[in-house]
Length: 141
Image (tube, one colour):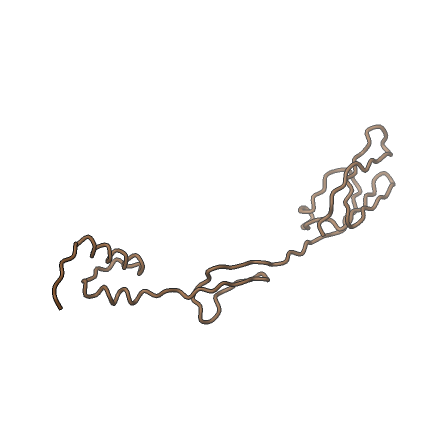
């Protein structure tokens, strides 16, 4: 085989690329570079769909994941609540995601909000016994 002349910076660039791919700092002779390049493995990646919570690894025959599609259904934690005092109430304070329905029992009156709608009750300033249902929001279902 005949001898060829190559620029040293080109050979240095090849050695740097090999080190980068291998995560190495070792030095190479030109005669060792082919073996080093051959030792670089290409990952066999898998696309995976996830439909439940948990920990996941690639299936057998794969050594990595290229894309992961997550579609875990969310089930809201809805609770019933009876309110007996004026104030602000937050589902998060009750370790819930929302309210299935609310019963308001203040000043002897009772009002029940239906499942699909939570009524926001405001005290009418004109009378202590009067309640106005002035706003509503959709409940989490």
